[in-house]
Image 1 (cartoon, one colour):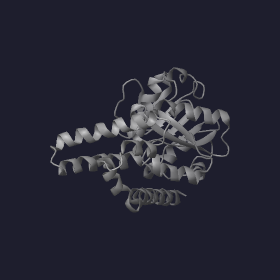
Image 2: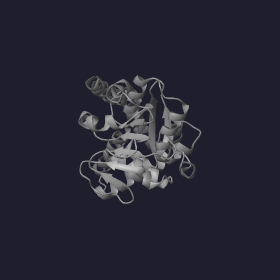
Image 3: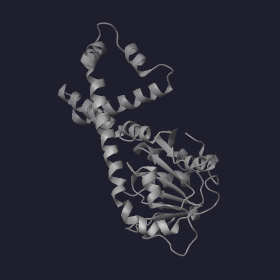
Image 4: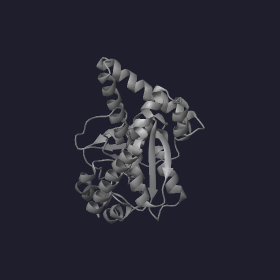
Length: 278
C-alpha cells in the first residue's frame, strides 16, 4: 500500500475534487483522501440525500457557480449515471480528470456522456478498501497521459494494492475476481462456520474459529514466498486429517470448477452491464 504521507498535494494540483456518491466505495475513497492529507477544502461531496459528512462540503447538486472540478469521481450506483449526467457534464472541461468506479460502464460510454475531459480512468475497488486493505483495478482511456494516470492512482493508492490493465475487457473480467471476490470469501467463511456447527460446535464459537482461521491463513499466505497450494500441502501430512479433507476438495477438481463457474457468471454480468450502458 502507498505511503499516505506522500499522497497529499499530488493529485491534480490543488483544484476541486468532486465526489458524486459517498456510499461504501465513495466513502472509503473519501476516508483515504483525508487520511492521506488532502485538504478537505478541496473536496465537495454530491449526494441527493445531502447527509452531512464531517470536514467536507456536501451538496445535493453540483455547484453551478464554482470552479470547474480538477477531478470528478463517479461513485453513484451505475443505474443512476444517466440521471446525473445532465447536471454534471456541462460543468466539466478539458482540465477535468474523470475517475469512474461504476461497474460495467466502459470508457467509450463515459466519453460519450462527458465529451469534455482531461482523461477518463476506470477504477474497480473492493470492500476491504474501507480499511486500507483493498484491491484497486485501474484502466485508462487512450487519451490519458502518464500524469493523468498518476493522479488517478494517487486517489486510490491509500486504499490498497493498485493493478493497471491496458485491456478494458480484461479489466472487466478481473473485477469478477477482486471486485466480487470478498463476497465469495465471506460465503466461504460462513460455510466453514456452519460446517463446524454440524460437528457439534456452538454457532458463535464456530463463527469465531472460522473467521480467525481464514484471517490467519490469509496473512500467512501474504507473507510467504511459497504459493498457497504449497502451503496447503505443507499442512497436510500423508494419511492425516487435513489430507482427508483436502481429498474431498481435490476430488474431480471440484473447488476449481466451482470457482471457475462463479467468476464466469460474474464476468458475464459485467459484460451485460457494459452492453446496457453503451
